[in-house]
Image 1 (cartoon, rainbow, N blue to C red):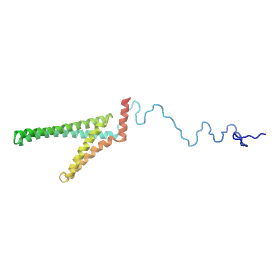
Image 2: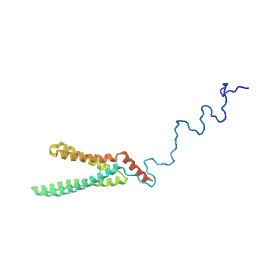
Image 3: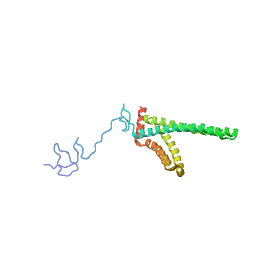
Image 4: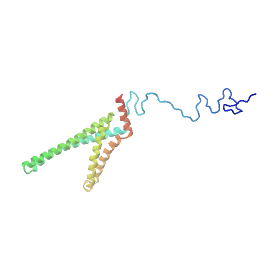
Length: 211
């Protein structure tokens, strides 16, 4: 009987019997132990943050809270606008009453009226930005306007807080606490709109509008 040899010329090699796998070769159709199985994602499947067709993305609590705080600031802005208008009218009559000469009265009333109108217009623009920005945020169209209005509120309330802190003896603990609360609310509006959940919400709405 002739001695069988393996492919490398070594004696003693016996070919595998029928139905037995060769040494080191995996059986066909049987997964290897511990080998991960990967499945291809369906073609055209949208990213996980996009809503399914026909559905609307849910509003995260951060966006709703920021919009509500924006509406609160807008209501305060309406009140501040009327106060500036009233201050301008009242200041005009006070200057006219206490001015010694006609030229001084005319110059003083024009100055007071101009300052009051300027501040009232600024307050009105900021009020509109907070209210309209809150509406845009709730509908998912944009958060930029509300962030801009919140940033302006941070600057104004921060300046007011440091002025009250510098005059702590006159403002008192209550005045400093109120200014600090207003500053915290302004910061909270911007922070809530910059969270990851808010970003996914507005990205989903942009994707829906692009379809």
